[in-house]
Image (cartoon, rainbow, N blue to C red; front, side, top):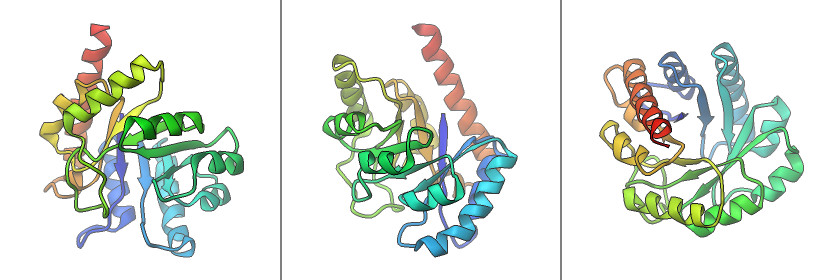
Length: 214
C-alpha cells in the first residue's frame, strides 16, 4: 500500500498534490496541514474528500478528530503530540480508521493496546517536511520493530514514512512492512503523476514477491 501525505509547495496546493497522487493511482490520501486551524482546514478537506470519493480512495485527516467526525472522513492520523488514540476511539467509535505515529516498538505496543488500525512508523531518514524528528530508523530499525512485533504476536499494518525515495522502496519492502507513505519524492518529480505510477508499481511488485514467498 502506498499512502500519500499532502504537502504545500511553491508549485502545488494541498488539493493539487492530492489530485496528482490520485491520478497516479494512489488510493490513500492523508491531508496534513500542520499549524492550520480547523476552520482553515475545512474547505481544503471538503475538496480533497470529494476527489477521494471520485477515485474511490481512503481519505484520512491528520490530527483533527472533531473535523473527521464532522465531515465523515474515513479516519484520522494522530502524531505523538496529538490526541491519544484511545480518546479518539471513544469519540469516533469503531467505524473510523485511526492511525498513530510510532518510532519505537514501545510506541507500537501502546498504539496496539489503545486500538489503532495502523502505524505510521518512522522516520526512515531525515525529512524537511516534519519538525522535531524522532531518531532515524533506517532499514535495520524497521526489521527490528517487525521482529519484536512477531515475537509479541502483534499484528498491525506498519507503514514506513519519512524521507523515502524511489530507490528506498525495495529494501524497505523487504523488511516486511505493509506499505510506504510518501510526499516530497512525488512532488519534487518533473512528472508527479508518472512518478506515483512508478512507485505504486514498484511497491506492488515487492508486495507480490512477499506473498509468493510465504
